Amino acid sequence: MKTKMFFLLLLAACITVQAQTPVKPTYVNMIDEIMKGVPAYWRTTLNDLERGVGYIRKGTVERVCLSAGGRPVYRIFYGKPNDVKNTANLSSSMGAGNARFYADKSAPDYRPTLFLVGAVHAGELEGTAALMNLLAILETGNDLSGKSYPFITACAEKMNFIIIPIANPDGRARMPLPSMMDLDFESFRYLGQGTWKDGTLTGYPSCKQVTPIKDASDFLGSYFNDDGVNMMHDYFFTNPCAETKAVLQTAETFAPDFTVLFHGGSNNKPHMAGSGYLFQSTKAKINAFQQFIADEYKDIDFSLGGEGVNDRSNVSFNLTTAISHVCGEPAITFESNQGLNYFDEKQPWLVKYTYDEIYQHHMISLEGLCKFVLNPPQLVEQNERRR
Ligand SMILES: [Zn+2]
Image (cartoon, rainbow, N blue to C red; front, side, top):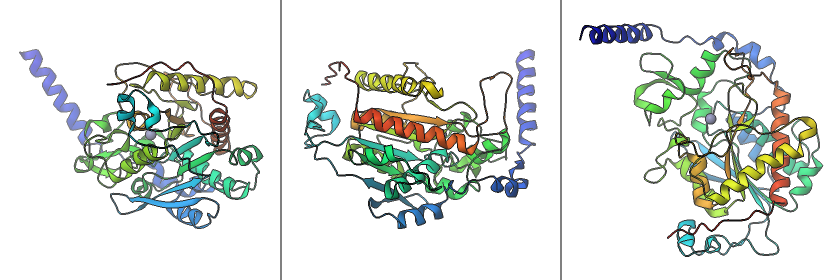
């Protein structure tokens, strides 16, 4: 009993110490210095997006919803919509024994479709920077630094792109920087996941212990919309926020062949976060994509490692999984390097990349995605009939 009391007192003391030391992030003294290092092509603000969509002529811009804070979420479509003769949702079509009742992709003029989503977590802006450049390429052939991408331009003649550059504009409005580049770990966590009411960091993954987190939070990090919802772990089946619903409805309506949610993964090399609870055919395609990228870019030593598809019991059913379950096709969480000033002896694989390197990783991956969906490997699809 005495021992139990001792531990309770110790726990209380620890909580008290923690409560007395709210975080004071150092980034506020570094903003001018950080901004000097941002390349001109790295455009990720809400104003950049407003200006960017204003220039779009070849694509079609739609405001698919307003965020919890009343900010528009933009979706841009390039290509020619497919007529997939949808007569049922995926669940019902699989119940009927054939996914073609949901999306029949057998027409000779069918165009493979990529669905690309940035800033679900709006402090993770590496993908948004790449997608803003991809929009410029699809409009003009050149990215925002004037570099041409003839391969992507040629692919665009044969396929469709659906792009949501910033899925969480509320979080973006709360993020004062264009990236996490050069930040210390504490500032990175502060701007990403925010603080509890006592001013201590909510941290990761502990920020997921409360959802929505708004009422438990003092500073709401850029992870969340203005209602404190982390879209990755929304109430998908019962009460998704408008932003999550817009992403899921896009996947359901367009039946994209491959979806990527672009995230930032600290100072890890670019990789695919773990995905669980997928159909066998989806797993096979994701595994094939991972292998394809490793083979295709062997000469420049680029691959997308990470856990990828696995069956670990602690992998959550998240937005990425939900997308696969409304459209029946692969969706992945792409985790970029974020260029933090952060290293850890226990994680010797951590590395700090530059803006240019991070941008390159995305452009290689986008090129690889185009190649993959235009020439998908022939996989033996297993019967996944659901009744
Ligand atoms: Zn994320």
